[in-house]
Image (cartoon, rainbow, N blue to C red; front, side, top):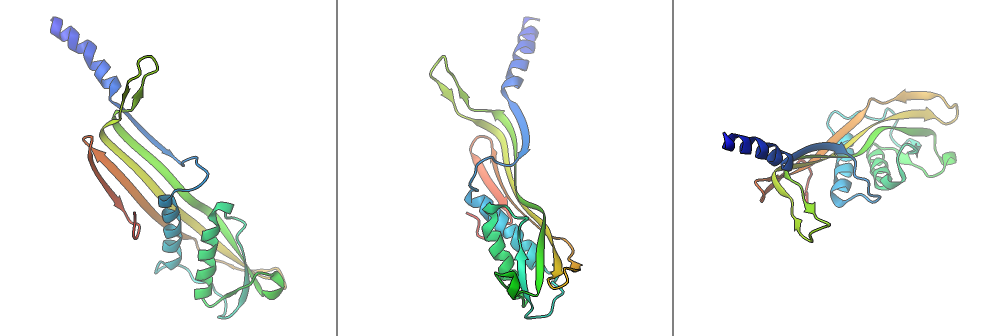
Length: 196
């Protein structure tokens, strides 16, 4: 009987130490990491160069100006990817509106990365009373990073201001997952090309 009481007291204590948590959040640092930059740029490439990606319905050699006001300032390289893709479509991207015949406005629904964490084990413990720290002991840990892009284009004729056409949505998704099992067995899965 005493052993049953002892087990019933120890079991909740052990279960409280083996904490599990799941979170989905965007990291709050100002500069994206290398992995996040790769996730974003390759998600954009997947959306643009997909076999089923829509085409811009303008004649070859049309002069355009690209309005990317929907992109954040940190996504400057994505604007350059769009300019290169439009050039591959046979369009000439101009810097000044006076030199262009059409304006292509970028409608961004989502461009960014998401971070998810699943953890089962003992988190790192720092003691303020006793100067001893315990490292993280992961029975199972999964970190998920997802890059996503979803956008469309509105095409306007500059002389009249009329909307010519809106393209269907372009969308691309990339992922980079790392796992730890039984404290030290690590592996990863990804659809990135040349992932570090």
